[in-house]
Length: 116
Length: 113
Image 1: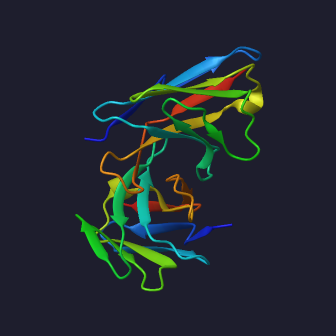
Image 2: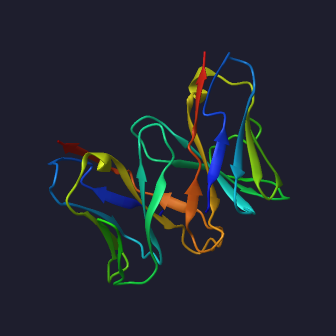
């Protein structure tokens, strides 16, 4: 149980275009999901908290107009990187709160974004 | 802010050896989580600890919640090549009620066959 998927697993896009990444909880409902960014050889950096049916909460320094988050259902959250630039190239990982509660987060396999 | 300090940053061990790594904080945590991340993958939850002094095992892995609530330890016994990866400790932001986690910088484990 508690499986989280992400799609796509990797994507290459041209500078100036937008890219959408999907995060799904496959066997449970997730009212709260999180989006992280990870640079090579670094830890996970929380970008935003995605709440079903309400606006996402962004961490300080994360541009909400650039990283659009939509949590339209209890099993799907999407992250859209708008007008992507090479510096947006990174590994993006989503997670969802365990259905058993507490603080356990289950992570998706990540999406490698390369902007050329 | 709440920071988690992990040590060592990296370690090279011989297959079959036991491994020990730890995570410390200047703040009290009520929950400690240990994750493993393989290259190009998302982190996988290994062990969750909820009580000070708690000792929990998951196969060859054992983790302890420090009595001061400011540290946690992860031990791996009889290491094997598939133990290679980065191990992260994590704990919830204090008082947030938002279930956000803060992560340590990780311990990179290499196992020499």
